[in-house]
Image 1 (cartoon, rainbow, N blue to C red):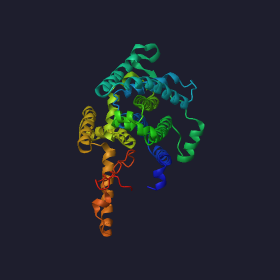
Image 2 (tube, rainbow, N blue to C red):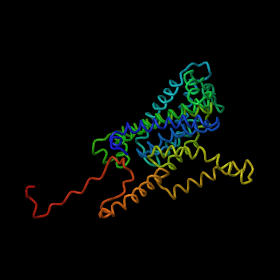
Image 3 (cartoon, rainbow, N blue to C red):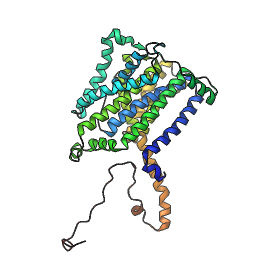
Image 4 (tube, rainbow, N blue to C red):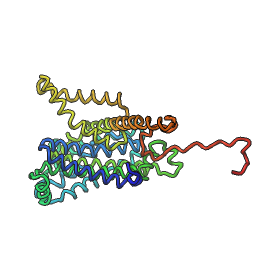
Length: 389
């Protein structure tokens, strides 16, 4: 990687985002409506998983209630888009969902900052169970068990013209929401990557690694934990808004405990603390059930038996990843790349006459470590004590 991009992470993130937008437009123009629907679901799951991996992997707070935070964003969207004549701009709806969920995240983060370990997990688990019940209690406003219908606004004229110009195809509502979902994902990931690679991310990691040491160097531990929870909740609100637009419904059954556990599984599969891993995990859990069901049908199973095969395959994949790649998919990729890099350097070093172990040193898997180890200082001997340097 060029040194300029290494020294300027924001420029590197923007370049990757531009490349990602090109890939998104190309893929959405090449696939059918069902695949666009699945890709939109994957994007919403990836946004929520990205926020959760920042909270759990970077800051060290375990949350089992992010499905409830997505529900807050989804119901905010449903209340702002009750019908096609609502006239609320889609960008304003998305920002409102993010703002409302972030505000809830501030309150929950202030309470969660006092909890650790299983107590924090229990509190967020209670949140995942309680929030869907609110919709059942306020049936008149939130629709009860049936939920609220979400009406997707028509795509703007400029988007239809641009789609026809680039792909010679008409822009459908599913394609439009898939494009919005992936654009939101790319913007969210750029913001999260910029935060985690800067001063804020270093504070989050310091609190995660050792709270007492972080306090000694002047970091406000409570503020750092609340800010991490707020950022993660805002990402969950955006994901909930997009998921409600994709499925056209905000119902309590869609945002229960299963969704919260699925998000945690996505983060573990992808690798804690890795945004790319969160996206890989979201893609795996989005497309794996359909692939497993189709394999079951091809093997002669009935539709019911093939559908029951999908959770079994998901569980087996989860166990295999944990056993064979404890760092998740992203950790396995970084390890493989480091081994290949080491093998590629060894012959050249041997020709130069350098000792491989001395020249290579330890393999730096995480090159973005903000706290590199300082070199050991020489201990002065008795003969050198008091001597001027």
